[in-house]
Length: 360
Ligand code: NAD
Ligand code: MG
Image: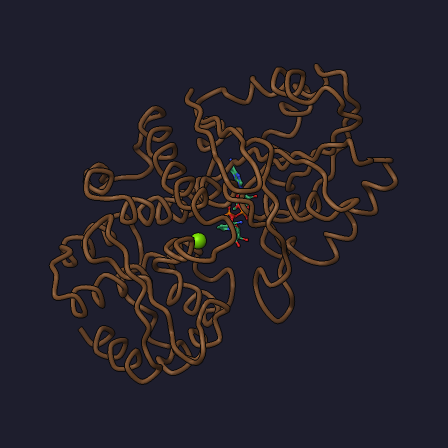
């Protein structure tokens, strides 16, 4: 079990990673939360079935009354309706400003429960207990929110958790598609960090064969990268945008396919490949693109954009991305692992690059 401290301008909190670290929850609450009135545990239907009772029993060992709210598993739960239903439940259960929310689940539960915590009575504390590999990314950094029918993650807030307890035993039950999806974000963190983390990952041939300690190690290192960036730029005024590596095109592919058709990580993987290829052309560097591409392929990631998606539709998605500015598309590029640069492209420049990359 290892602990990492996240320090942002607004707060400081521990991220604990390792098998069985869930067991530290009651002590953490007793030591850190002496004035707690009530706890609301929020989870999804799949995670509830697997781990709901386990966590509930642990919380029963604390002096605090606990209630539980279960949402349907899946992205559709990051909605206004669920948001209101949980707020209503919290009011009925008489939660107050001294109450605590615990998010048990993947990024969906974390974002939703975190947004409830950010807004209930103008903000109450919450703890993240991530259960997916992807949530090594989403549980850290304090971005919380829900989807609007007109766009994903459009409504939200910055609200840092008071702790993240990442029990790596949860990952055992994760379906392989979800495991791969989360692994794409680990790869992203490695490219942002540098050669040695990247080489450690490239030696992995099968994500599902990772043993417990290796998994905990790469999760820890991934979180370390995110922590460093978020620590310097909590509200995305600058370098936090580096975390968008692979996401400009990735988000466009995800949306054009229709959400849920391809996993987020699969789309980010394709997006990263394009970013690497573009980086090689723009900076005239060698990022071992061919090797990375065949490694991605062997892990099961898609390495090309589905033929039925039109380049012009993808480009117009990229222009309307909330991260692009004044009609230019911002792309996060890599000069070498650990050395990141944001470059701006016009729609027609990027169209040419994307077209020729798709024809390769
Ligand atoms: P998810 O929460 O929907 O989990 C994926 C699936 O796995 C769900 O069906 C869930 O029920 C199931 N599951 C969860 N844990 C399990 C376990 N241990 N065993 C078996 N099944 C399990 O999705 P996700 O990929 O974790 O997160 C995606 C969400 O995260 C998106 O909404 C995205 O916008 C958000 N996100 C947020 C941030 C952020 O900074 N806040 C960053 C990245 C992604
Ligand atoms: Mg992502």
